[in-house]
Amino acid sequence: MEKMTEDARAPQISPRQWTGLCSLAGGYFIALLDLTIINLAVPSLTKDLGATTAQVFWTVNSYGLILALTIIPSGRLGDRFDHRRMFLSGTIILAAASVLCGVSASATMLIAGRFLQGLGAGILVPQTLTLIGLTFPEEARGRAVGIWGSIAGTASIIGPLIGGVLIDRLSWRGVFFITIPIAVLAVALGLRGLPRGESRTVRFDLGGTLLAALALVALLYSCLQGPHAGWEPFAFRSRCSPCLHSWCMNVMSTPTVQCFHAPFGRILGSPPLRCSGWSLRSASSP
Image 1 (tube, rainbow, N blue to C red):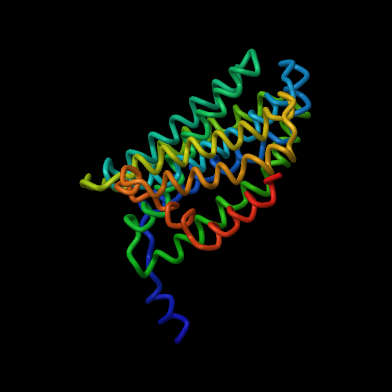
Image 2 (cartoon, rainbow, N blue to C red):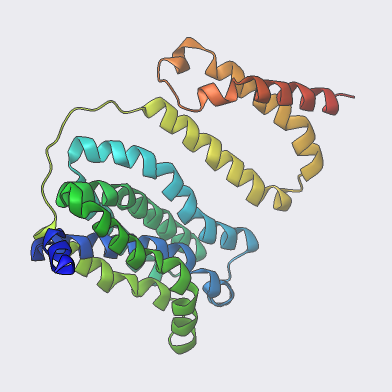
């Protein structure tokens, strides 16, 4: 009797809510799948496209770089332009970029496709949890998040397994084409099951976003291209990092940058990092 009472109190999920949840889980699934599925394809694409070591690094890491850069501003854009629209747009961009990667005839074309994949993933990922909150009432939200997380979280585990099977049976191009039907299904289910939101005016930190993007791209470029350009890693690190640190602190202290309220400005100006910067400068001085 008590069990029946608990079942009656359990929140009921409607078919439309299930449809929306499957769409969100599918989009998040392919976003995480493309992050890991390419790892086993590196030897094959290197042989077929004649990619250099630096090009292979960009192929693998460009996706995660763009994903990290766009995931925070995309959440704010979802508040501005409707989370449902942003989720569907990101899924479509990810699917189109997967086609570009699958038909790539050169390493440069493949890298461009991976950048677009990261952009699509960065647009769709931050919308998923927000849309769950809009789709489900508070008493059913925990159950929906658990289902969404369990389905989508398997992508990071089975990604290398699926990649190995596709490379063995087809070719490295199959690791990109596998995401297309899942993306199409996610868009179709999203059009049917996801609620429309209201657009509202929000503040967008354009200055902080651009500074973070420039810093991460410059750091990744120096790490990937430095060895091929003949840079000496130890000398570059010991002499340039204190200067870079001091430059960042000076830039963050200017009124022009402070007006953007960049979130990492307070971190760069914190006493521990100031002390570490001066210590590095003293250590690198002759």
